[in-house]
Length: 139
Image: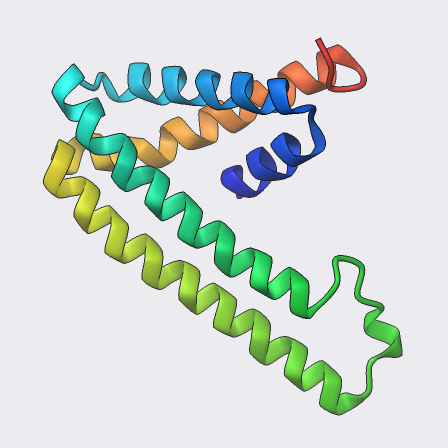
């Protein structure tokens, strides 16, 4: 969920804001996980690969089913197809989560990997707070 919010927010922002938000996310997660320089060098490429693959799966779903699908206008067959595609997306996300948490665990250990989800949620909350306080989402 956090990454969906971050990616949606970054995509809605100007290019400079996207890089700034990414830098804030990296700094926040690095600090929360207390990553050493060596850990950060190996963690971020794996984590970014996970994020890219997850976003690619979501993007494929969104391309197949436009953002604002009118569920009321779907036939039963189309609704079945939509549900099947959504289940497939969730299964893909779960598979990627499992695969990459194992990879990340090998890089930073189980404790820091377990802290990752909490750090992601806290960053999302901070981001939402910032956006709410800014009114329009701009600085």
